[in-house]
Image (cartoon, rainbow, N blue to C red; front, side, top):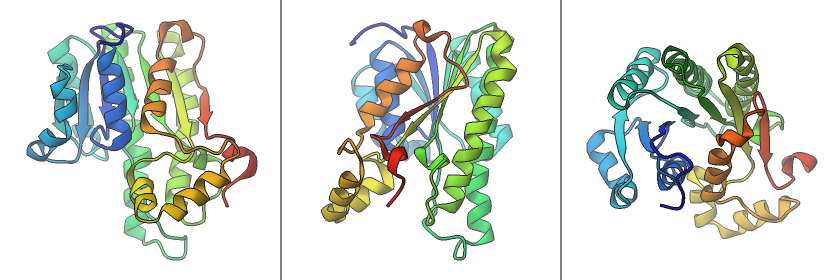
Length: 258
């Protein structure tokens, strides 16, 4: 273990089998937390993806959950709280993306993306906050946002709209639950070397170079860097930070997408 900042704390992570989700699980796990992971992948297939967490001896449980189903999310949060006594931290990470312009995206694609990214985020965060209140926990919610919440990306319309809405959801929820000692914040990365972007850049390194050159600080973000910022904002010495967006985009917001 690196340290025990989160020893025996219970951390929920949606979309926990993706690159960023796994990095966050490892970061909290190395600091002593118990990790409740959800994703849409069946449990048998999830075992392989959880191998690193398992091999490090990190206490974890996996649940197959579609976050667009509010009842399923409520059940997941409740099951984890019942098993481990309470929930302390919720990392709202599950998301999907459609690479199409507004005049190409279908009704079904738009609806799915809003349902998963926005509604799913609300379902998880609100279920966690209700759990915090019920158990008297001064918990933390961290939304995985994006710099795309305020920068127009013509080929990611539903994604950008959903991330912009999540930013206001974050602020609304922070105010609503502040009286309970609950903090709600957003981490908003720029170009992360993960997921779909990673696959594209691996196949075409020139696109990775172009992306890197568009960033004022000149570097892509690695998943472990995102994970460290997520864990950092949950530390008790950040007790005055709530309703905030932490941009970590290397200055992309200063110049906009190219």
